[in-house]
Length: 136
Image 1 (tube, rainbow, N blue to C red):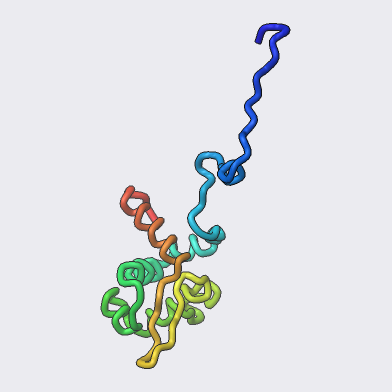
Image 2 (image 1 turned 30 degrees about the vertical axis):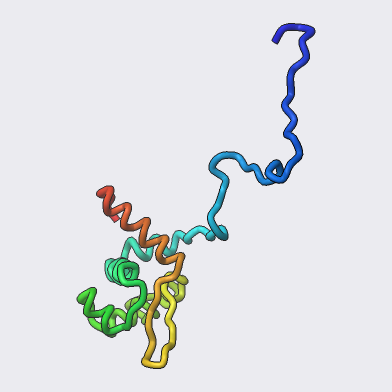
């Protein structure tokens, strides 16, 4: 800048959109989701059954336990253990329900299992990894 020349500054004109302007890439759609803990990542990486149940629930949205067992080819009781936990096979705090990836919903005809927004987000990221050829 040449000496003696004043630097031009641009002042935003007041208006209804002036206070709503955000830098590029900062706009969010809906409430901010908390990050998925590392324990969830590790439990899904180590347990093929958890991954299969989660991806199957992501495909259908919500279903009964028996239908989920038939879809995945896993025994019905083992699917229940995956969803709710059963020591010594599946830790209670790493079950899909306890981590908030799946929620049980009581209906007039029984209990159905529905994937949550957090679970759908995790299943989507797992599917992208598989598509890229990453080893899970």
